[in-house]
Image 1 (cartoon, rainbow over the protein chains, first blue to last red):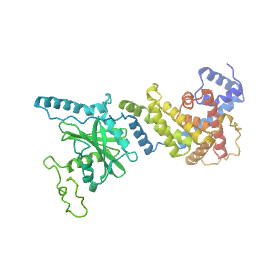
Image 2 (image 1 turned 120 degrees about the vertical axis):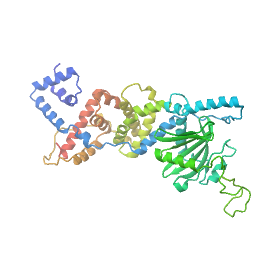
Image 3 (image 1 turned 90 degrees about the vertical axis):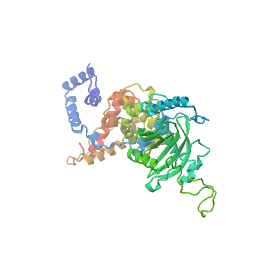
Image 4 (image 1 turned 180 degrees about the vertical axis):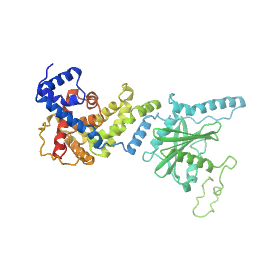
Length: 292
Length: 171
């Protein structure tokens, strides 16, 4: 193949970029060797390329994705993972059974407890409780989705759940430690109705999900999904899960504080408020509040 | 579904910076670039099971480029000069100053300005080649044009830059 000068000029950049196929490259070099005009022109282009090599890449601004974009992408992906919540889910079964049936039920529950994390971490089965939790958390960050009852008073939030769930979620007041209660709402987790308590620490929203999950106590475990931290444990037949973009250590610390602040089984209620109905506590106390 | 997100995060999200850089250079501001990239990443994820190749970066950038151009057509049509109508500039070097300081920051500023002034169709091929180090074939896939077109746009983009830099004192 022979090449004319105009073609040679046009192909110079491609040659210097190493993008000519073997046949074209051969014709290109042959023409340069034989042409008094194109030979020096190519040499000068090579020099310029050698001088500027890499300088554009080094000097030009490279815009990196800002953290808000990364978080927004993570949240959007988490929302993509949402299976629709079950409509009209039945109340959880009770464990008022005879001893054999109870033992079988307990074994089944223990087995499901062992797979609860495994299902989420492997992501292989269709059940993905961690993914659901993160998706619920992200949904709740939308405007007006965070709380059904917006109150920083746990004595208002806790009784709100009565009649809506067949368990009472413990609600802690940790405002003095920098965790403000925003309120509560109903949610669904793992096919079951759940309480969601919304807290806030600095700019971070934290959802505490609570639902019925009979079985032995399980120590707190942490995981991450789509950029969010999740800490979950089980005690007193309830499973708890914290979801937040708060750092892992702080979230685990919050879990510890929550567990320490709740009444124990021997002391089912702080007697910090007089029983309902007395109406004689002064102007600041509504008479129909239940003790916390 | 959870494992699809995991696969996407592992293969595609490492190229989020490259995606943002391209969108930012095309849209010319941070907020629009972020919007466009978010939309593009979501679209890329929804079509992710159609991705069988081994070039996740090219695949993401193609989606981002496509989304950005749609956005530009809707929101800033005046920015889209059809590049094949841009007249080729003569390669003379007017009044270059050989004593111009070889300062990287000044070069960077001059390059940023010159690249920003390029028509979008030239700007994108130049950046994909010079900054991302893509081959002509990879660039052609991202900008959805034949390789010959990529070659000629790149040569012309470099020609324009050469003239502008020389006018600013660079050789």
